[in-house]
Length: 189
Length: 395
Image (tube, rainbow over all chains, first blue to last red; front, side, top):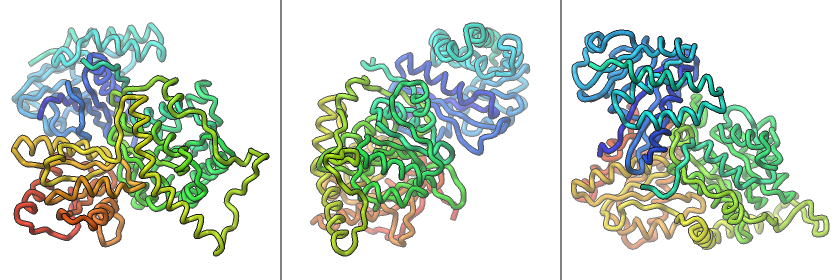
């Protein structure tokens, strides 16, 4: 049954978790996969914790319930790194978090022994490249290094496609730089 | 590899995209909550000059449908969109649109009705409108939404049908989910729906007509009889539209979609996105060797009685999943309809009813699997529980 890859995104309203879930899905779609991307809607408030999901598969995706047992969890906001992000994550699951800490520290804090843990200081990268605290695009880079579900090239062209008209060449290039830096700087453990 | 390029779109955007291709003469809509992104996206097409549609922003959903009735009576190809309490506020005019035989097409995002206040998916809104005289199509995913809107225009405007159509999709579950959608060429869509030539138009002064006059004991009943016949006849005509659609776009539509039902002994019957999730449970139980299947009605109005009875009557037991409660004390709307459809059959399966998912409560493949296991027991022992069951609720 598990021929679908499921990713759960944790962020705060306004940080772009929903967009990140969508960018990943769209990059996969461009690579010939079937996809779903959807946020979990509650009352919509900036700053409130939100979850978003990406499903990627080689086959048509019929399931329409929310993701309960993700293969990968991505935490975009470091203040959300609490044991609740592990909900439903199997032992062999992958956890990618926005944090300056080493993976060991995160493992210890969350008592997560299995799978893979990856950390990257996405906020710092975002501030230095995009010049704004928008850690969602660098987290995509970190995710792809840890769990290469689509190629970095596919993501880059999707981001270019999405951003160029909206925010112009300079900011688009900054986002792509952020993705690549996070891809290089992510620590696995 | 797939041969067609799929475009990422949310269910709402897909509906708006189909509306752009249809390019109705008039869209009247209430532009704020409880409206959905359908009207927002369509307004953008209007603002960008992508369509020549006259967009009428009105002060309420009641006015939205009123303006649609006026436009359609004047002979304009007319569309609007709504959801939840918005549809509830339209109510009075929803009936008028149908009984005036105006072929308005309306995408509806299915969401719960108040109270308590809730913005998430269930089918209370359109199921409440099931006796209003509109044709109703329910969609599992964005692709079905897209194709059904194009199909709906052709059905609504058919000279022997002349009825409005609601194209329903699940709130948030599909309306806000991005999926890959296969889109048709603008010209092919326009060619398929053709130029709209209304049979009657208030603006056709050479052939004056009266629309919506007082109609008391003398003729009201005859008009209702004709309305009833129009819905009845649509059962015979809609398959012709399916064929034209298949010939044009290479995509098959029917009154229902069945999944692994041919040799099944038990089946689940569900509308819209839940039918997709049910396919996962069907596959799992089939792998275990159980003969289970799925019936997903696409049309609820007209209710395709013979079509559904033929496919379900040979089974031993079925469960009907309702995403709305009709508070009849006699089960949900889909359940009562299916049970009634099966009654004239010589062989009838046991029919169970489960209410689920009200106010957006999630339903999982595991929930559906457990319903299947109950059905397999019923098929074996013949013992059924007549009470209405509820899935995933705190008791």
